[in-house]
Length: 345
Image 1: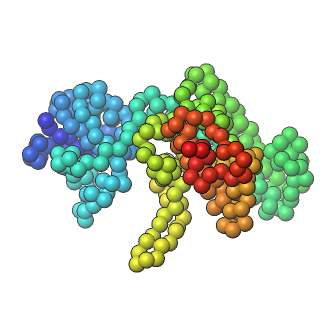
Image 2: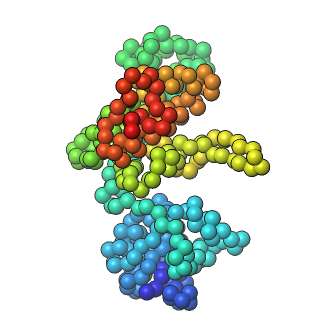
Image 3: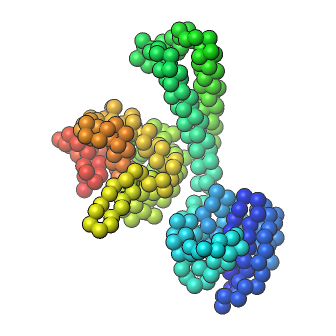
């Protein structure tokens, strides 16, 4: 069986075709299109195809599998640890991918199926629009702060608050900026409603959605986003691994008996991290157990760290809920959520 190592790029893909004994048969660069890669893969039937996890590896994986190939998609982080070298080119990377598969040292990563990826595309689109809308609302707060104005209404973007914003006592230049920002919010409100209707019309469903909706702070669309990003909870062997995947674990430097806890790691699923932090923002306000925990930690560490800590506890709860197939429930008679999980053993 031959091995095909592919270093996928946006426009060009470096390819190395190799025998099982390590003999390189051919090296080339082809366009990263369905037609070009399809023609290439048809020339080496029944091969092992290796690539890294990239933004476009999903459709390449589907294409290779449809042609009868055995596909290996490698975790980028561990590939760097295994094949770090001073000389690094696309051609060399493609050859190394083939060698790692040939020798059995290839760190396979999980790749969801095409149906789940299609669901992710729609749900992530809604999340993207909501995030952009939040950024614009934060910008409006900044404009008001720069002008030394404060809305007398409790909800700035509620009905009364919006009426005040329309007539806010700002100078002409800042007033024009505010009008543009309000117009953008109106536009994004319409786009969020549009994609929400599309999700409802398509009837996108996941068996975990109703269960996830029982978690404080998680709405239906938030539950759908979590379900799509997680896909299969059994690929995580502990809540700590799941929290790490969600990007809610801080970096740790341990050397010479000194342990330093740093900021959150930039690795992990950014969409899952965002929705869990958003859920924490709502949960600590409405849920007494999370509110108590948040308030205690806020006094010692500040609101930002406290919010992430609540998000991490929600992530632990989500892990145990999906693993045990149970709805969210706090232990009776407890004022705080358990350190390790929100579900009693």
